[in-house]
Image (cartoon, rainbow, N blue to C red; front, side):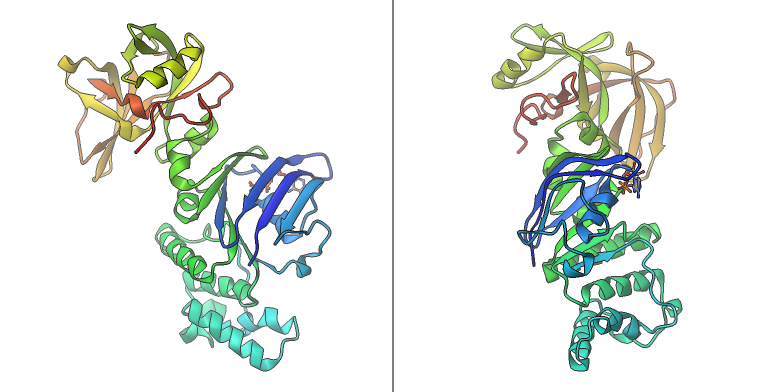
Amino acid sequence: MATIDFEHIDKIYPGGTQAIFDYNLNVADGELVAFVGPSGCGKSTLLRLLAGLETATHGTLRIGGQAVNALPPQQRNVAMVFQDYALYPHMTVRRNLEFPLKMRDLPRADIDKQVSWVADLLSLGGLLDRLPKQLSGGQRQRVAMGRALVRQPTVFLMDEPLSNLDARLRVQIRAEIGELLDRTGITTVYVTHDQAEAMTLGDRVAVMDRGRLQQVAPPRELYERPANVFVAGFIGNPPMNLFSARLTAADGGLNLHLGEQSWLLALSAPTVERWRAWLDQPLTAGIRPEHLHLVAAEAGGLRATVADAEYLGHETLLHMRIDGMAASEPTLVARLSGIQLFEKGETVRLSLDSTRLHLFGPDGLALTDGTAAADAIP
Ligand code: ADP
């Protein structure tokens, strides 16, 4: 097993595209870090650098503490699984699994031992004599993982390994991969564009945008304390509501202005003190759909107009426009439990949970040292 260290990595492709900018990250021994971000953000480039299929333009890449920049792929003991897991179609599962070991000229007894270890690990025992075309998509994916694991790599790299599977199978295999990696304890980098996959699998999740690391943290911390507007909007489904807002001083506290309406924030004295530094600045406010609540008109919440409602059975996603907000601002989404019926154009009243409010400065960074939530979250 091994640690992985990215130290000030830049990657500029021939032709001048800079895919990675000053990337720094340490992956602990046995840890699973999910790299997530939109298409083109540089995830696969980082994986290819680790595998030795690309060379870093600047910086040092270490595996197990050893600089590997100049090491060819076969000397890195790194295994990789891609989305198009090409198995050899004319070889049985057993021969597919044996292939990487035969390439290394291992003695027959060792090959048999390793294949039976990996077949047990992945429950492939009953499938060893079948050809790939006689397997389901999920089984083929398991064989592909088996072929990567069979030579007991120190580092496991997975590049969108589930994107060819249908939604239900994806969830099942995702759970299997999580369990498998827990059991083997192999240090793993898992690349995906799907934030739900990253959040369910990763011990930590590294969010990237346009070649730069935006934040790396355990899933819960990423969700509750996004470091900037990009992470806030990327993690979560439906994503966090983000809108322009401004703070003004109120009697002993702070008012949040959203368009023509304002909301007196219920905050602790230290938070009021911290946020005072940002009075009258153009801020971005963020609130997750589950932290917006409907209230009775007498309760005096924010006025909003229903734009649309999605009835999902177990919950209703209510899309609204805050009255008096610029038309260029996005609609807000509230997550309500069960089925609740609404008419388009109906007026509703909203209350906003002040302690769940995130504020981001004009530079997009969360106010106060990456701690966006107004108060400590229990
Ligand atoms: P992701 O995996 O997040 O979709 P990639 O790492 O594949 O992103 O790509 C990052 C950026 O590098 C993109 O702008 C892409 O067009 C560019 N890129 C990737 N591979 C090459 C290459 N071989 N030559 C030139 N540019 C490349």
